[in-house]
Length: 431
Ligand code: UGA
Image (cartoon, rainbow, N blue to C red; front, side):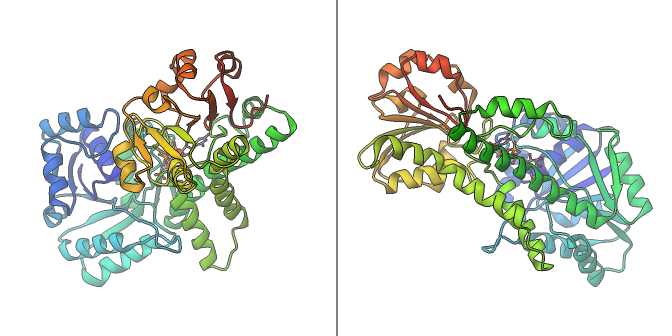
């Protein structure tokens, strides 16, 4: 099939590359000329395992190309995927400016029948708006569909090539057949539904996963007070098939470009139809508060943090990504510097991105985890990078001014770390 993917962000680029891997001819479009040149030179602007190799191979095979010429991409494709960003407005609502702009471009350049698919996460009703916009400009035949994306950063290629399900939301039989044919090589689980339900499935899924995280984080807070171990509690719960064992890892809360944005957007969507989504509001509040557990523990230990040297391991919102958007480390480090602490920070790949968000004279950016820990009064682990679990704990303890660790991600075995001489605080695992 001939496919155009408009927008080469996370979702667009990964989808485009994977569709070409399936044997389709894919043109990826971006209005940023520099980015297009970079992609044409075989460089990938994001850190995503396996993506570059796949991109280069499919480009070489003539199945994948990059352009800033949207008109040409529209003309030459049967299916057009809209995968542009939907950033949050100040009130949490999704900004649909880019989606609408693309719809207008499609309307302007439509010369024959196309299927226009929205992959970006968009509020319920957006596909109808896309249809209206195109129809207001063009009399050519076309159908719209919503095929939401469920990939995770860090395993995007794997998730896209092996999805749990593909949701196809459309009111057109012709679009259903074409989209089934395109996606069938990926999974048998093709869920065909109406457009609005497809749009809602994406928000409901992310909101539910965020709820699981905030739920287990609250349980962890109670575990700390009653002397239970949240990791064992989660394990015991997870064997129940109705609950499931994933997304029950207690920590310092979720971050990233999706959960924070999509939960706020769903609260707004509900609000616009006069529904107060109380549960989700609490999920968001719990998540924000959970980050400060690290601070509360430090303050309990030291009283004031002024003049203390605090080592931070992990700046990315989760391991295997250099993405720091809405990472808990942002709020935590801001608080520490404002409280007068000296921060020594290390992350294997996210430091450059992080410095664009937070930088201050009182933050020292370190090249290795041991350099960051050296001479520190306490060490806080904020992202569960694999290398942190492989450290020599005795050596680590001996380099610090005080061997105090706040493990925000339950990386370590309690007994082992205490035997190394650490005063150790983790999440929901007292004692
Ligand atoms: C998330 C969803 O998992 C994807 O299905 C979805 O497509 C994507 O958002 C999106 O909407 O585009 P992602 O943001 O890449 O993907 O990251 P996750 O792996 O889901 O992790 C999100 C956050 O939750 C991380 O900060 C992680 O540390 C935290 N988390 C996750 C926990 O604190 N505990 C857990 O048990 C699981």
